[in-house]
Image (cartoon, rainbow, N blue to C red; front, side, top):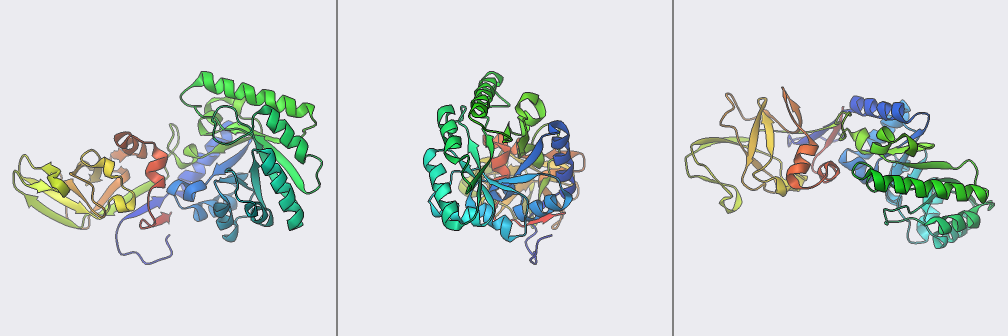
Length: 367
């Protein structure tokens, strides 16, 4: 549970039991490959420290993936001992020093970065660990095959650096099988070339959640899971529920306007409930007039523009509604369910963004 007194009733509840089932399901698909749990961006808005400590205690994954040095340092400070792979490209030079001092595994995508991590390890007096990132078609960070081979040759045999793995990132695993096959073929050829130069026992990984479940040829030695672990993929359980409570109820006449810019006008008498959640909490303004929340087990439409701190709902059809009643913005209530995927579709985005944008004002309760 959160470590501070809560007064405002808006909160996100994170089911650790559902997380466990999801990660066990990924592991069942991926086995014997290891599972790296991607927890960047505060575990995609789910609250990274409690999730990571729980997974460590329950032995639900082999390692964690973070985007940047700061995220890795936060987990180390919280007591996370499992391997941590920094998936982003580190800059500036002193970033490598801090990573090495705190036992973070770094991603190397260029000859320059290889030389920097080697120099940092010498200055730190401590061995660095790294994975080489291969560019196969995402065109974000990564080295093409000739450069990847040169990076390995630059670092292999150096006492100060351990090249522990090599990986790539699939850009379209769930949408473009032909392109994904091309990426995997290029990665496979790169592995073969690295093998010719003496690479042995590297941890090879390419699969994201979708590939780990659906593409056996992509699994190699480790898979990286995010969306499946958080339950925003078919066959997995969403672990996050976003809840609040009714704080005000009023009846309005036909023709009454609701919210900023009179963005909704009542065509008949209506009962309206106000709930304390808005775009200041990460509930997107793009959901204005489109989304529904659950009250009394019924879907109730958002009326007019989502404001910074509050949303108004049409509760006319709810037989009994009172101040203090629970409202579900994401999750299940009775037979009804509102998913992050549903909201993402309405807002023209992806489920990751729906949860990641939840702000600090929304406490996470890990239950």
